[in-house]
Structures are given as structure tokens and as C-alpha cells.
Figure 1: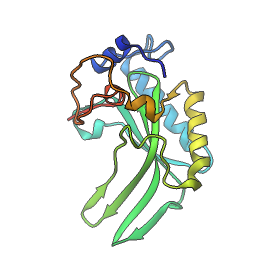
Figure 2: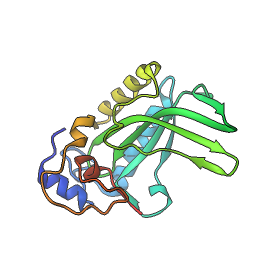
Figure 3: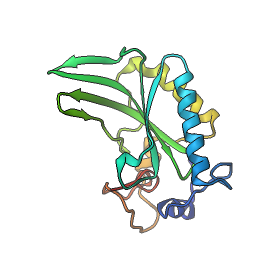
Amino acid sequence: MKLSSQELQEIINGNQVGSEWPFMGGTPDDVEVHLRMIMQSLNASYGIEVDGEFDHYGSGYASYVHLFCKRPKDASTYQRDGRKWTDGIAVYLSRLAPVAVLGAETRTVFNRGSSHGFLDANSIDSLPDETWSEEKTIIESILVEEGYELASGDEMKAPLPFDSTIKSAFDDKSVFDAIFYWED
């Protein structure tokens, strides 16, 4: 992933960067349409069902869309401690640059609600277990085909090359935090 300091600062400021449409020349609405098309492509692929969080977690602003990719027909769901657990792969698609990351996520459903995890720079490239490599390959190929670059955990863990304030619910000052932030 090759983003300049200036591009990272633009992303922190909420501005789109990129050399291809919809990031160059498109509106935020164009990007949202593009992101929904990516989710449709993932859902149409063999062996993956996808849920997407497009509503900024219900408050504030998220610089990314959070997708949860699971195996179809509850094949990755199990019961434990009175709860329904579902393993899958979280995919974060930036709304501001053609950059994506992915990693393992588990979601739970219980009597009074549900919960899901968040990726951080340390969980990028992780899988629920080794049997998920085929799904990861499918996801990666669709994202690349749609113009997204997959960033590695090492790239995302790198400290920002400048001082900045990121309006985020998270605390770090890494490249990950500059691209994938959530203002609550």
C-alpha cells in the first residue's frame, strides 16, 4: 500500500483520495453505491454470505464500511453457554480510499442482544481457523477485482509519519487509525 503523508492527512480530514473513480471525481454517494456493489459481488460468490454495516454503527461517522463474511446456512454457527456464536471474516472497506483490510471476527447472539468485534492493526490477516483460507482467497480476489488494495497488518501497524489528531473512538496513532476511524 502506497499512500503519501498528504493522502493520509486528507483521509484523516474526511476527504477521498485515489486515482480511479469513484474516489477520484466521484461523490461520497458514488462511493457508497460502489461499496454496496462490492457487497453484492461477495454475496454472489460461492460459499459466502455477507452482512454489511453501512449506517456508521448507528451514530457518528465511520470512515469505512464493516462487512461480515460467514459461511452460508449457519455452517459457521454454533451454540455455547446459551449463546449463538458465528465465526467469520470481517472486511473493512475504506469510504475514503481504495484500501481494505480483513481479519477474523466472531459474532454472538444472546437473550438480550448481540455483539460483534472490531478489527485493529494486530488482527489483520487473521482467520477464525485454517479452514477459512478458501473464503479468504475468494474475498481477496473480489476486492482486488473491484479496485481495492489489501493492506497488510505490518503496513497498518506503522506509526503515522507526522503528528495528527484523529477524531476517533480508538486511541492509536497508526496508519490503520488514519484510514479506518470511527467518530462516535
